[in-house]
Image (cartoon, rainbow, N blue to C red; front, side, top):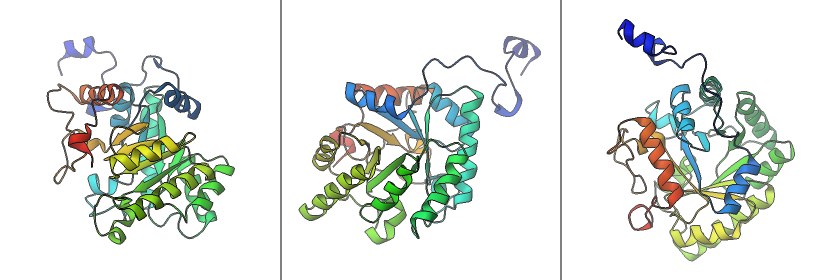
Length: 296
């Protein structure tokens, strides 16, 4: 960069690092009451994954309400074949990185930390320890996968002041047991089980619920049945309370073929910020996802 360019950009810093100061946030911090209000008004909730300081800051600037520090980082950042190999220490590191990025730019997004495989399965006490690690790293909420056996764990965490996002449908941590990355809840028995598990998770205190690769009709039923727990869809149609995508997928950068439910928001955009802003707008106005293209 030329000397003139430096003069024109007083906050410029080397190596793409964040500036030491930034303007005051243009929106109030996202909180559970604000997410509840959005649902009540019929405004869609937007969520993206992010794993580092800079992309988290960009997502916040684009208007994304919720940033999920997902264990999907095992695949998109570490090159693992699945999320199973991600450790709690790795999740702590990435949560801290995301939170520092948001703090540097006075970001206001709600940060959700994924509890990785094996970090909450042994006991409620193990789950509390693992959740405490991510909360102390700066997360506002933790996410865990599965229904039925997780109800007691969710209740145990919520009673101790830890907000919980649940996850049903295609649960990547148990992909081997599910027989691969397949749509879940297609037959009557499995659909009924998923609905029962969703209601039980709401009763246990979960306030967000990711529905992944679930048929549109079932996703809509679950969303309408849950008034205190807000559904976030990924491959579950446009009837959910909000949407989430893996950041790398929606930017068109990954190591394989994009799933059916992904749209490349980088196409036709000049920057990552523009792409993320377009994602937010598309979710809010209902143009994404398109059930005919991105759902079952």
